[in-house]
Length: 113
Length: 112
Image 1 (cartoon, rainbow over the protein chains, first blue to last red):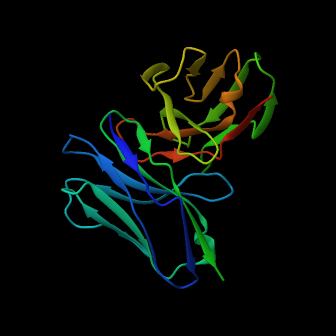
Image 2 (image 1 turned 180 degrees about the vertical axis):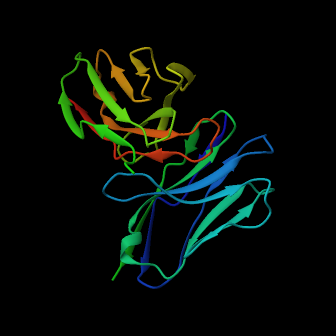
């Protein structure tokens, strides 16, 4: 079974600054996918960024980037130039070929004005 | 293009009752998965439906059952409700084999 661990229950960041969320996972597989999802108070889970394990290059989507360390089984998310609309719960998720997502417990991010 | 829609958005039931939640997938998607998200936790996989059959199932009791219709919409049924079934139930749709899931806004179930 795959497990996903997010060790930071809450993070607070000043608007326009940078915050990094940590995520570690456990698997014996070599080919898999990793995701960061954002869940604002509206409850809808929104995909922020994805990373294929076979790609060495770290994924980037605008202000969001990841640091993928496959050997260490680490997958952190960096939010640059934080905006008030980034306030949400962020989930790290692991996706293997069995078509189900395994989520971490989440990190609540609060962006302060 | 409508995304994933779920109904109802909120509902309250009492212990022992039964509930049915509904999901319409994103246009063009043929696979529907259901997740249970307890307050303050990450979603847990319940099961996945494709071609009107349950294809994958998580660690949930038989009280949780589902159905997928020919138009790919889906229902989640929970029988003999327990207090611990109180949660946000999320539906996600995808194309078979795709790695990206699109989620609805969920149905918030409260069991009293």
